[in-house]
Amino acid sequence: MTAGWIAHWVLRLWLACTLLIYGWSKVFLMQMGVADYGDSLTTFGEMSPMGLLWRFMAFSPIVQILAGVAEVVAAALLLFRRTAWLGGLVAAAVMAVVFLLNMTFDVPVKQLTLVMTLAGLVVAAPWFAHLGRILTGRPVPAPMLPRPVPWTRLQRVARWAGPLTAVAVLGVSGTVFATMTGGAGVAAPMSPGLPGVYRVVEDTAPPADQLVEDARWQQVAFGQHGVEHARFALRLANGEFYEGRYSVDGDRVLIDLYPAREGDRPLVREYERTVVLTWAPVPAGVALSGEGVDVILAEDPESRYLFDRGFSWAPTTPVNR
Image (cartoon, rainbow, N blue to C red; front, side, top):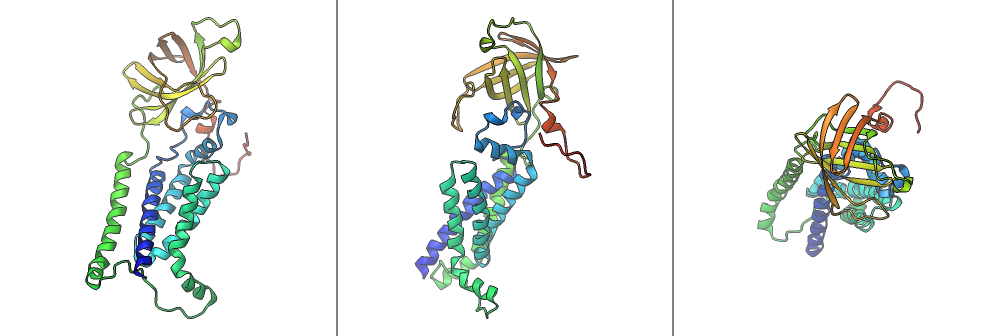
């Protein structure tokens, strides 16, 4: 049985550590982020199934945090011998839901989440007989504890070292993720005057003869969440769509752009080019100039509707758009 319990310990330790990584990244809003103006120009038809799921989770931080809490709680239960059985069941239930979402939204970690679901069941398997007796109202013997350490003297040390190590793992892992995100997951960008969603209302560049060749800026979105950089989105008059990031240095805005959106794309991409512009507030909104761009931007409340609407407890007219 000792070899079996050692394998059981290794499995539940791996499952707990993996759950902590995914769980804390959701608790601190790292995995899916939060709803950002940088997404405001992306239409439904331009989203991949995974992108749709990510934006769904990002729109409700509470849902994302609670999902992360469930994974962290499962990991915490797995780290202690007396609650390992419950941790296995909770992990199996949580990861079964994640596996279903990965299957239906085509997220490319289907195999991993399936393995984690099965691993939770395997961890809880030694206690299935006990649970069966509880559910059927039969007498239940004394609880069984995992014994991966076969030596009596070492067991006395492990009895206390195990729980202390578990507490340390939980505390250190949470602290690491909190430090990585500044404790809040997201932060405001450096310039409070620039974030927003805009339409170009003035442009000094002449239109092209054909709309498909018109590369003038039409819509611009400066994200409101970031640390050193925030998200950026740009749609041209010819329909081409660009994503990237921006940072503000005084009256300069530095924009790093990915290639135009087209077909599948990897999670890790290289920026295609950097545009350096000068910005300034004007009565109409924001003026941008430099590197072939000389435009006036005005706020686009229609494109910000999803972000600005807010929550209402009282019955209101249904808005399904």
